[in-house]
Image (cartoon, rainbow, N blue to C red; front, side, top):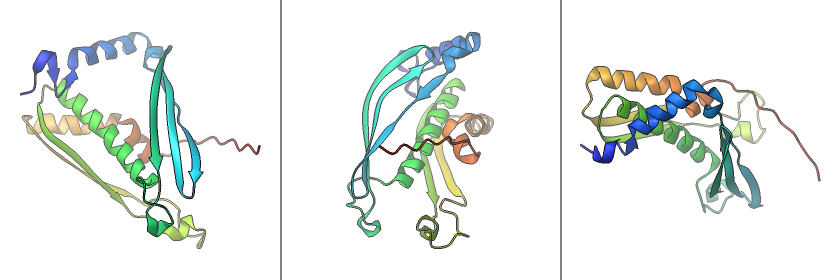
Length: 185
């Protein structure tokens, strides 16, 4: 059991409950605004910068960079994961947070947790070679492999909670509105 200093699965459950209670009392405290700026750095390379986010009225300083490239076979330099791999990693990581939080709230101690995601694109869509072929995925498949001390009923609740509440899972599973602005300098 990894229940050191009030932690379950490395998560402070009391702090999670306290945060959820604060958001329940003041919904503005639960508004999280994220922003990422991505700049082309040559060829198929780009760098995304994360400098800040807002949580309620609080501005949180961030300082992260994500490098993106394509494999050599797709005309890249193979210096970093590509956008599709980041998309899947973001989906998996968001669901991991959900599984950890839900398991911790159920007092289930995780031994291991992995999510394997895969999808297939037909690059004729991306390349504009066939207008009948979508440039994106028809479907993604993911498999969650978990072990810990939960009962079957707890695991079922945890899994259903993640399906119902994971932001990135929801964003991929549902159409979201994208508002575009195109500026020529």
